[in-house]
Length: 153
Image (cartoon, rainbow, N blue to C red):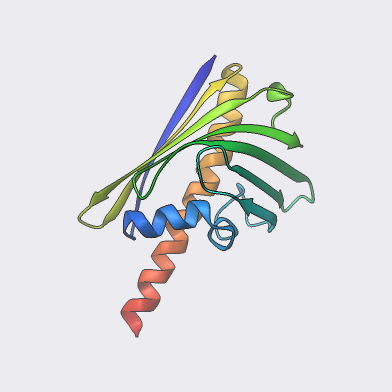
């Protein structure tokens, strides 16, 4: 088993970032490694609740994942199981991994630490690192645009 950890600084308070990571309308703004659309986002944000997300990549392929919330500590921590139900990384077919998201307030907003653990091997880790990097970069851009828009008002 192997894992990856990504860190991003986001121009929004932890509570706002937490909502973007857990509410369907927030998930639609950032999930998926490229600019393809989120087709479905369902969340029941409580310990034992489920999360399901389906997205289409720009190449037309569709991917869907689901998971169970294992820890919910709004607005600082979210832990969930994760598995691909359609598409996704072939190395992880049938496997359940673990996502941990920690949000720490900083002067400019939030430092997000995203860890995806219990991946089967380095091939899967590298593939997920690329995918999650694209998604988290979209999240950073989303809030950068919001801040720019707010500054112009």
